[in-house]
Image (tube, rainbow, N blue to C red):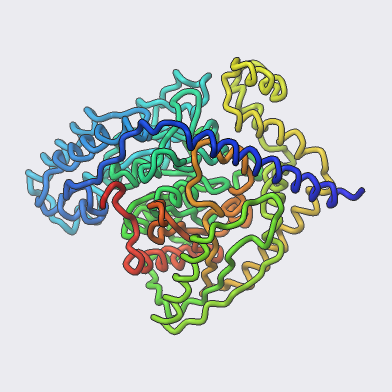
Amino acid sequence: MSSSVLERSLAILLGAVSRFLLALLSLFQSFRPRNFRPVPPAVRPLLLLSGVELARRIRRRQVKCVDVIQAYISRIKDVNPIVNALVAERFSAALKEAQQVDNRLAEGSEDEKSLEESVPYLGVPFTVKEAFALEGLPNSSGLVSRKNVIALTDAAVVTNLRKAGAIPLGVTNCSELCMWYESSNNLYGITRNPYNVDRIVGGSSGGEGCIIAAAGSVMGVGSDIGGSIRMPAFYNGIFGHKPTTGLIPNDGQFPNATGLRAEFLCTGPMCRYAEDLIPMFKIMAGPNVSKVKLDEEVFIKKVKFYSMEHDGGSPFLSKVDNELIHAQRRLIAYLEVQFGVQVQQVQIHKMKYAFQIWSAMMFTEGTDGKEPESFKELMRDCGKEVKPLWELAKKILGLSAYTLPAIGLGIVEDLAKVNHRRNAKLMSMCQNLQAEFSSLLGDDGVFLYPSHPKIAPRHHHPKLMPFNFAYTAIFNVLELPATQCPLGLSKEGLPLGIQLVANHHNDHLCLGVARHLESAFGGWRNPGAP
């Protein structure tokens, strides 16, 4: 029997088992009592402004920075017991820094224009994924063995944002070692969706997406090697951008990528308002911002749009929810009616192999001939050797310190290294797919594609449909910029969204389209609001 036939047979078997287990899990959850309080809507006016607008009002002395920071601290204290998004805070330090901003402005020695140029986010609060170093706060990435690790310095992007005047409030939850799409670990617990606390927030930047969506933060820092910015942004109804590879520094996060994986890991902005995407990008990227055309205006009529509603039928992935397909079609109808553009439906056949391509590329040695640091090595973190199969046995007995997804990835990693011949074929397929996208998109094209096949699933369901992250992951190994853009709410009040993908170094296109769609489709919706 050929390997392709075996692969398809395995996929069909896994799919059948997953559907059966999902049915059992859904039945169990339907009888579980709901004890969670709903997340109250944000009502304080200061919580409903973009970072750009907050900075403007602070510079003009229209609001006190202390009042802004206190409003966000109060909001976090209201919602965090419900959603468990922020895992460590620096509220006292943030208030002192806010007072310093107010004192600086009271001196009156700097005019508004000079302040805007030198510190464009003066006094604006932000949060940081716990995987990034924020001086004085934990930097464990949810790994129990790192529970006492405290950052001694700031990560590069945190430094850049602080130099721009922004004030960090704390760090947010992520999945263990940032390699799973539900933010839950044995150190901080599980993070819950502000639109429905029985639903996931995504991962690995899930705590970040959650606290921003819950109006506990204006904006935040995320990282993405398989969709870890875009999936949480999608599930939480906010904006998130994975930039072209290499534009924003990854320094100062754990785990960082090595070897070929360093080309796939991207740090990027997450925010409630599209107005903040480009200013955040500029600040986070530093000198590298000159490599992209962020100041170039985007005219929708001049953009060529291409659309795909699903991956083409991979047996490993779930079917796309009908509401997501309808949302994408509404978007297409809007573009065609309002702007007279013709959205071209395309079928890119290699997309059905997205998961296999991503896996092969992730476990491939770098240009230096060295294999990437294994997940097992990250799990051990300078401690004893980790044996995933042994940890699985311990997990069944409730004795393992690791989460099931982390153990599973350690097992999959060993299997992925076995078939070198197959991996070489998939690497070649990745190169061909990259060339196909580059030819299709050119310098004026935007590709419309689901951010994920499922609207925010219930907690733990991702374990039974583990490969769905391929909808975002494929663009990491293709090194293309992609923006998650919210498109309203589903019938159950859960966020809908779409990925906007452009060619290399054409980040301005997907960011510009996202900003336009915010005004057309409403952008972020206040959770808990009637």
